[in-house]
Image 1 (tube, rainbow, N blue to C red):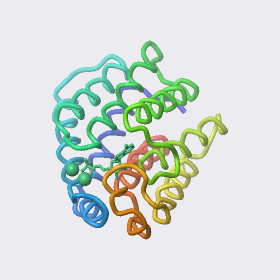
Image 2 (image 1 turned 30 degrees about the horizontal axis):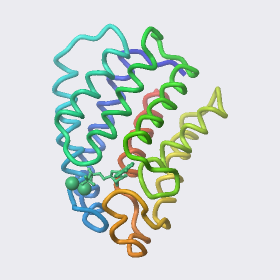
Image 3 (image 1 turned 180 degrees about the vertical axis):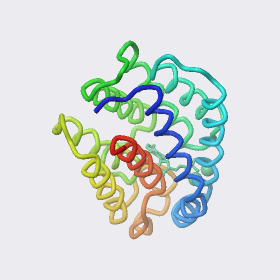
Length: 204
Ligand code: ADP
Ligand code: MG
Ligand code: MG
């Protein structure tokens, strides 16, 4: 795989489309086990990201993903803004000077992003947060230096679906204890959209 400014712009455009189209769905998931704002948070944040990135010029993937990070951190409240913001900031720092971003550079960037998410949120895998999608996707990238984009999407999808059976330990859903079981984690669904969008760009 190879990512350049153009393909990363497509990636976040596709991601924004999915978030806007599924805003109500993400919110309904968060209504079940959180405070019902995940769709609103993500839709606002990524619309701001698109507003910023479509009116700016970028020479590197690092500069572009840094702007994504800064926008999410400043425009999105709640847990998800700082978490996704940190992920994109760590990715940006990791891929600095690596244009075009190849498989190894991207995998290292996802590793850094996940480290950042975990430093900030203190969640381990299996605690019903978006870590439950990022960690299996990272392992997939580490284990497959060449892959079919459809396999990446499938990995993210299975991981997202697996959050349904988990009792939440982190985030607002943790207040519900056993009652959080039987519901998908909203942040894992938005993270699935993120990797699904990436897979679609790689497919083209
Ligand atoms: P808030 O919970 O502040 O209202 P959102 O609803 O936008 O924020 O985002 C909720 C999502 O954030 C959860 O579904 C979960 O995936 C993720 N999340 C919450 N807390 C954590 C954490 N400590 N570590 C990792 N992810 C978390
Ligand atoms: Mg919420
Ligand atoms: Mg909230």
